Structures are given as structure tokens and as C-alpha cells.
Length: 132
Image (cartoon, rainbow, N blue to C red; front, side, top):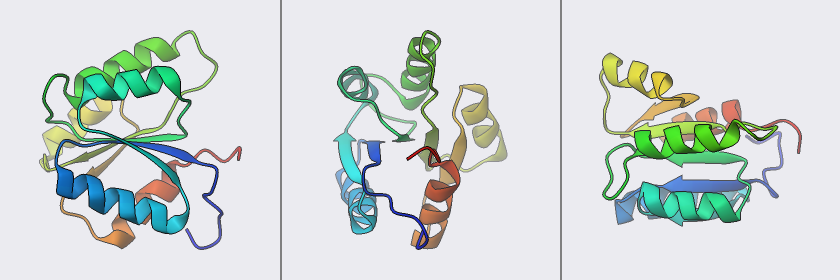
């Protein structure tokens, strides 16, 4: 991440746990990202309709609308658009079957909790669009 400038990138963090929200937000702000935080999939969809995000970090288990439902809805909406927003599952579901399901649901990458900041930044860098 040291060789790129993430300022200008908009990241949506969808996470229901307040402590995890603040941790992820702090890691992103430290590198210069513009961060939007949502505590459930329903709220994330409201933000998605208002902003074009460069990256979405999606928890799975949340109230109102879970991460799988939100991802499916985002992918459905993107069918009529010329871009696909990278969605990274950031989840405590750490079994191989969970990872596979994330990809089957339309997510682009997977980061199990807990993670190190090095792991976090590596998965972010791997998924950032290169057109900025």
C-alpha cells in the first residue's frame, strides 16, 4: 500500500459490531481512504444508491439484511451498469465452506476475522480498482 495513493477512493464498510467498525475505519483513514460506515445490509443498500464506491468491505452476519443478501442485491443492480464494485467478505466465518460460499454469493475476496493489519492492507490493495 505504500506505493499507491488511496486518497479519492471511496470505501463502504458494512459491519454491525461498533468496535470492528471503528478498527476498520481507523485502518482505512490512516491510509487516506474516504470511508462510509453502515451497520447492516439494508443501510448499506441505501448508501449504495447514493454513492459510487470503489470497494465494499462486507460482514456476513448482520441484522435486517445480511452480507449475502446485500451482495446479491448489489450484483443484481450492477447488471445494468458498466462497472462491478469489488466486495470483500470480512467475517468471523472462517471455515473453507464459508469462504467458498462468499465467492458463490458474488463476493470477490475474503478476509477472516481476526486479521492483522498487514493481512488487511494486502487484501485491500489486491482489490482496489486500478483506474484512479
